[in-house]
Image (cartoon, rainbow, N blue to C red; front, side, top):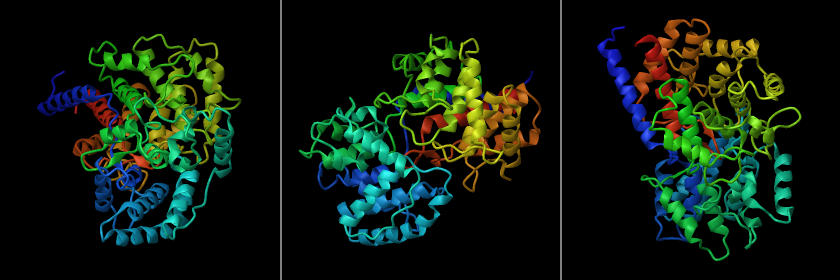
Length: 503
């Protein structure tokens, strides 16, 4: 086959970009967000020599015209909690004469947002306790803010009560510790909450909350942690580091695209890192500095390690099994469908496991149970249903045709005129990458897809490949953007398309 100059150029460009991406894996880079930046900004008066004034300046520069803070595409829980955190920080720590005007604009915006929270498919992490804690802080500072309607409030109350009434108060074993800023007033002086890197659950906001409440007002390791992750523009990421998540997701995208092989020496150090942090009993967590494991990262890590020939065993998934579904976290308030789909994909690699038929059946029954609209699922870790669908189409093929074909039809019928896909009103490179990745696989391995759909999606991605906006779609305590997993999805989708069709 003779390649055109354009095809050769694009293949070479992709290979170079993939090599660069692999060389950068492991540091867990996440873009800065308003929510965590606001919590660290509150430390500025208490620790004036640590550069946290830069967080205040970032907040001042990044308020939207409507008075809010948060991601550029509107998810109301994200905008609400980010704005509430920002105006509390500016009222408490701000010294600029114009801060009060910023606070008032944010205060007014919250009253407009509060009635729209029910429009979101999913809440942000810890919303019931975080919004309540920030509302109390706001009231103490004389702010007039609305109290939001709360989903899953009873479940959160039970989790908080179980942690605080436990004899050992093992914070590091609880997912609630990730939202410690909302529970900081319940901390005892002897409570152990810090990870080895000085963070609280690799969360800048939780670490800032710890520093605001620590009895002696200082904790050198925690301050050093925050200094080490502050970004050049003064902001703070939603979580740092996310080394295990970053490696597992990035390698999976490149693996699916056949852009890397398990023998590639460049990826060996990262595979070894996943293996060193793997627990045969519980699997993996998103960070080397977060003690609680989850089935989502466990399934993704299992898939990569199994592909690369490491001796992982599917017995690990027993830790997450319940009577009628699989948990993502032991204490979760509602199931994560993306974790089920990712587990289904992992189980396809171990069909000889004795529990394979039962587990497959349980996962598929769960997916049917939550198939509310017959077209797509939404998920609590990502605002876009295209994220779940990208894994589901391949995982379900040959197992449940009705579910896979209904997802396929929805993806095909919802492409935008610019060639991309986007759930929150406009196309994004990330969502388009997920759709192109899965449609190329379907076209090559199962049945033909209209080439005009694939061609226009690929052209959209080529135009956006260096897009600097980096729209956050991942659900943490606010929306966030994990740089390298998304980059891997984009490069992998284009590599799949270009090698399949030579364009």
